[in-house]
Length: 171
Image (tube, rainbow, N blue to C red; front, side):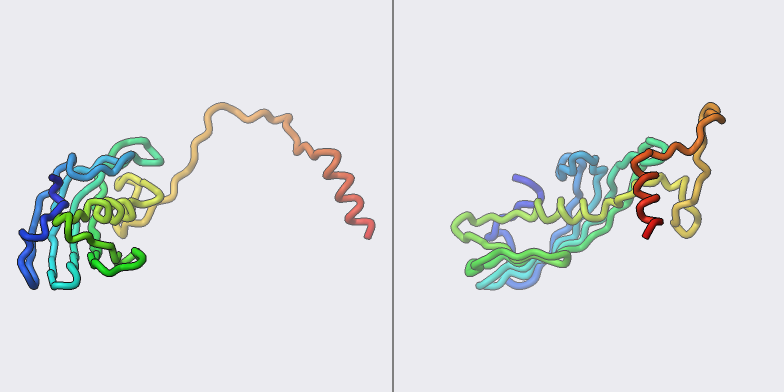
C-alpha cells in the first residue's frame, strides 16, 4: 500500500494530522525526477465526508533549458480534497477537489492529487539558478554565433510578394 493511500478506520473521527517522509520512489513525476520531501496531511473525518488538506515540501530534479545541466528545484504546494459518498459529479480546480468515495472499499488515495499539485509547481522555463540574479529574475545573455555569416547574402524577396505589394500600392 502506498504512503498516500489511507484506510478509513485508521483515521480518527474529527480532526487529525499525519506527517510523512516522501522518498523518490513514492511519487512518479515522469518525465521529471522527484528528489524527495515531506508531506503534512490534515484530516477532518465526519459521517458524511472526509476532508483532506495537505502541504508538500520537496524537490524536483530538472534539466536547465539554457545549459542542459541538471539542478534541484524546490517545490512547495498545498491542496484540499473532499471525499463524499453522495457526489453526482466530481469537480476539481486549482485549490481543491471533490471526489466520490465508496465506503465499501474502506480506503482512499490522494496520490494523484499530490502528483498533479507538485507537477503544477514545475516552471515552464527551467533555468539553472546560476542564470538568475539575486531577486530570482532570469538574467539576459548574449547569444553566441559560430562562424561568419556570408556577406553577399542580400535580402531576397519572393517575386510573388513583390507583385502583391505593387497591387496594394496601386490602390
